[in-house]
Length: 327
Image (cartoon, rainbow, N blue to C red; front, side, top):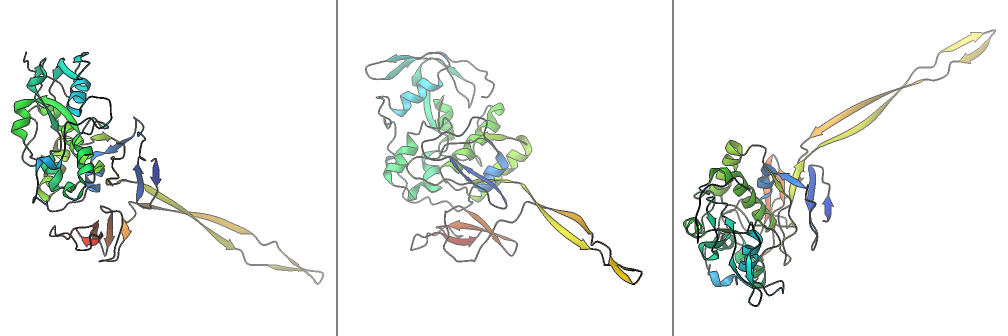
């Protein structure tokens, strides 16, 4: 067991609405490596709602399971993936015995896997509060063991992970300052991919940190979440150009030569007017109407509306159907 310090941080469905371009990946596909989103656009896509803290139990998220049938549970898979050298693995039990790890949260270096926790970057309790209370157990198991996107699970120093607990960025950030922007980018990517909301304090702190410390941050796009979970669509504002044509007809002039009228040819002067509309409005909504998918944003009379199964107070509608509500 060794300990060091110092580390420097680490579909296909296309919908083209008037307000921008929405990009999602279809099930079983990967987004191109050069596909990225502005972090601010990702934050805007995430619904802001009150948390639902009741009823959480860690056992509702079956974890450290082998869900892909390779005989390695998700903890061992992450240990193998995050080792910076070829790890030593017991082939019979698929148990990692030794490797070389650098904890991104604090820069600590480790060779013994017992010094590491596998952290759910968005903790299971936070996930429950933000929407997973409405998932099936099978869907929660997919999240708890997700290795299809490397941002979901990370190998980190055990006591640092324990200090984090289930807190969100409003009251916990990694001690290694150089990792701050990566952490925030991972956090919002996970929330958007899995359709998880943010509460007011969380959303406000993330926006402030992005503006103050991570201006211009871009995050890699993600594959669609497994299990039929609907994530939030990220809309990239664009400029839409319309071209109109105006036709002007000159008046007819008649000349009389030897009492024979001659008409001059009619001429048409064509002028082109170009209208540029920037950041065209969101979907215009009818308050109280049912809508789909949940998490979609709209506008009416200059006010922002969200398609949600919860009221603005965080109370679930009795019929469990999403409808437009203010906020």
